[in-house]
Amino acid sequence: IISRSQIVQFSSLNKNIIYEELLDAGYDKETSRIVSNLTNSTIEALETASNEAYLDIVEIVKEIYRLQQTKEDSVIIYFNENNSIIYTEKEISHLFLSCLIIYQKDLINFKVSDFDNIVFQDEIDTIGDIARTKTKNRLIDELESMLSLKARLSNYINERLAYDNLLLNLERG
Image (cartoon, rainbow, N blue to C red; front, top):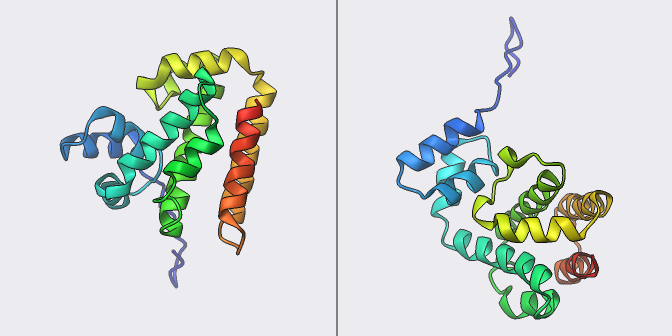
């Protein structure tokens, strides 16, 4: 904020503060960990955690990575059968991609043995299995694809095609 007399800068809230606020509000540890990594605002965190689509999005993300691990079904087929909420609003699409990015960062954190910074703690077995089968550079390339898509989501792109491309890239791993 620029005042007439001085510039005032505000630092973002610590993730732990948001995590504790969410726990105090009655959210479980997993939700509190994930949402505290999505935003630097307590108000926004509470709104996200209470969003009806949030839990569905997290389950879709977990299943996408579980399918990568087990290879029992195609990630793209699963996504196309279960993606109806993703395309309802831009905000939901951004939330989905942000959760994918957090999970992808967890894979990299596992790969470099930074276990304290893994957000999806309940998914540690799946994360470990995937991280052991992919190189660190491959995981980073996948993360870069996600970040690139996140930057392009604000533009008028064919989201379905962009997500299919991203998930195909993940599945080829």
